[in-house]
Image (cartoon, rainbow, N blue to C red; front, side, top):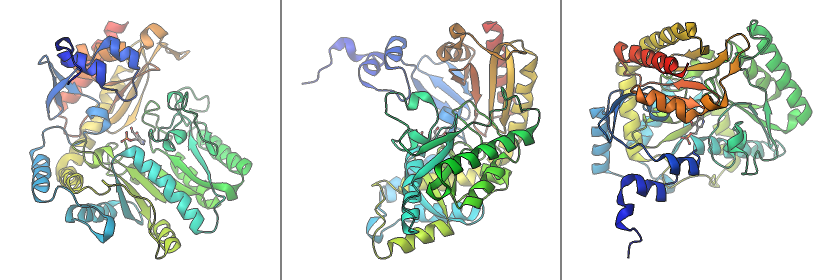
Length: 452
Ligand code: PLP
């Protein structure tokens, strides 16, 4: 016997009653209701009322290849028909994950030659934590159980990863961070008194990281986690050389350096991996989102030869006890291979051209009285709203409601992220046309005018 009354059968009512949404105010969502998307093509999404919008955020910064790519749909369909599932347990495997692992290893910086596939970004980060611990145990240094990450950073929502995340709502009420999960200040430049001198920002962070390591004891620090550009913290771009300087401090102390490229990889900032821009090779890297362009779930951990060898030798004949039923899922891998072909077949190039156009267009909004800062790289950007440009005063709480800013953009036919601190986030699909990029900028200006 089903519990629903006929009255409960509208989609919105069913959603309100039964679907728990990620990172949302449950009560707020119940009151506002759901907006249902029904179809999408290229960079355009269509809602249940037939309204077409430009998706300036590529879903959740993931649909890098754009919607409706027939070759991706065909690759997934073919794989489902031929072999929808194969486990990697018991020395088994399937062609697509093997080929995707090899393709990633071929393209990844330095000796990141070993790929462990996950279902998304959070479990990729969580897997790195397990691999890092295992690595240090295998080295005879189990006391290396302390982790350092960066304020405003986001490293997913798993129990361990959310502790590395440095955004309050992911901690409050969850008993996080765990003991041994430390933070250093963000490189955020906008309200940083040192911002005019990028080298001073780098020096300050280096000094803070060194001091943190010294306080904890270098022999106890397992790993340092960093996003090449902080995404969920509000698209915060470090000064050039910042990441490299942090990498050097870690190398000096023998601390593993983990680059979380869940947002930044796969053309989001220009190259396939943002670490290429920085000229660094991390010990481990996490990717997800653009890996399959959001068509199906998948993430991955890339490990250096050295990390892999220590883990492999440490385990010897014993199994390394980490794995999921859906690790290296063949359908996701088939999608990943096809999406990679699209990136290399022109999307990366288009993304670079459109990224330059997006950055220039958004910079043009700096003349608007509400715009305090425009920042980003490639197809990843943010516009920060203020009420006083000189004092850099955040927009007041009445405007600050992210949902209101989101709604205003929606009414102009634009989907953007509206961060609670009054920041618009942009991560359009790499397939955008020049006209679509211009429309993203124009519609943003309309929203700002209406918000004045
Ligand atoms: N790491 C970073 C840098 C992210 O931005 C995200 C998600 O936005 C994650 C990890 C978690 O990925 P997922 O949402 O796929 O679990």
